Image 1 (cartoon, rainbow, N blue to C red):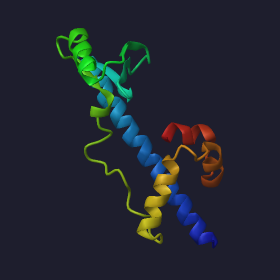
Image 2 (image 1 turned 90 degrees about the vertical axis):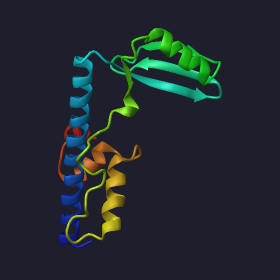
Image 3 (image 1 turned 45 degrees about the vertical axis):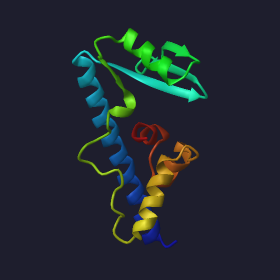
Length: 145
């Protein structure tokens, strides 16, 4: 890659990281607002076969588990949350107005921009290696992922 192409990729990756940070913060703000309104944020569901688990999203504490399928899950959830104040984390969006994918940086093919954004978010991508490439610390990268 020429220096200009490398700089274009670095610029795009930095934009992606900052975009991810903004979307992540937007979601955390939404979560805080829901909690302030009296909602408990939960995670979990069917894990494998008929087994399920339900967790407090903030603490990670197990609220309940079972192995009798989704009907049991629904029954237990209704019993433990009779006022229907729990919200599943999957139902809290990252952002209503920010697109999931950014347009590619000028000079990059659009498809390459998408692939780079997926690479940034991939679990196999090292924050350290990404930081070295874009000129940021590992901590700065982690804050954005």
